[in-house]
Length: 433
Ligand code: NAD
Image 1 (cartoon, protein in one colour):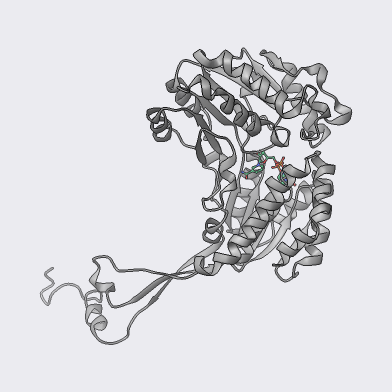
Image 2 (cartoon, protein in one colour):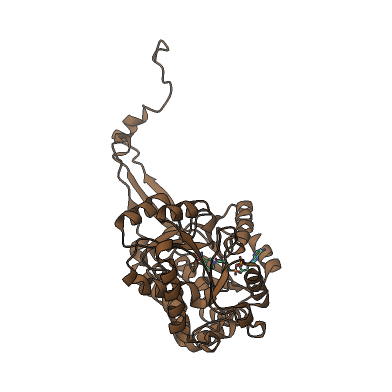
């Protein structure tokens, strides 16, 4: 309830803080951050008691356990360190915290030093609204987080890059804590066997899934794999969708954000300078460091050895690769680390089942992008290099609880007779078996 009050009484302050950090529009901050956390709070308030109910276990064809009470209780794990990134600074800080607290834990929050305004605002508000016996905030960069990671806690929940995820995993091993890693990677969008009439919708959903938050989303479409036959038509539709969303001059659009920092701007600018592809939308000349502005950029005519395919882009850059068919796409996806999300646009059920049965990813979405993260009734998380463990809704309660087996044995009657089966001596009087 305190978190809900904090969000509702300070909505404008929080929206403004995110705007200062990322130039995110109010609509986007409400939709992708504040409302999402608030929905999670309401969902937990309604269901957390039921989700925490012990599960009765039934002895399955095991007569030795037939008379016992056997159940699994979900207990608090204890103290959880929650480390968050800068790109959705409200959502990714608070969304896991809702389930951590609902499961009865105590939380230490460490936000990103790059989302300067939001981190300062949330720190002030969390200290004002939350009971310090339940929720504490510590701030800092690498040095402070390194010290934080040495503290003996029961669970570390980290959202951020795979590189830092490895450091966190080693730190968790040293203190024997449970671990959740919510990491990133390159999320592909496969486009195969789709009607020409549907390409406009496909293009809009991809443009939304790429350029929301200026491409700085873990679930953003990182690149497109499109069948040769529809490639040219799709590129045209993508260009039209960008213009429809952000106008002729995206720099003037109130709905197009900015890059978080000079370092990230330089990283993205360097990628654009080194690509061998053709700019079909956006250009190096359009970039403006003084405004941390990189335009919505579409790059075509690429080969898979291009620099744009060597790392997670986390930028408003959309590279496109041609494929002969979905078989090529499946092969390409499998040659690369398992993504956080895999998107596939197709009207063929056969392609759907082939993609589903032959790829691995944190989540798999057909005919849309990113929208699955709005559903709180399914777990959110990666697999392998894109993450470990999952949360949101009931999955949070499961992930941030210790599942304790409780058995109550009777101390007389039939059970004691069965005890004889396990006590030595096992051999007969003449030592025979
Ligand atoms: P990051 O890994 O650089 O930083 C994340 C957090 O770790 C920050 O709080 C930061 O202060 C801390 N940190 C940074 N370096 C550290 C170090 N050496 N030791 C200890 N702590 C350190 O990530 P970022 O740039 O903030 O976020 C972008 C990355 O996060 C992308 O890879 C993106 O895909 C991923 N991400 C994943 C999700 C998800 O839910 N799976 C969501 C958002 C972002």
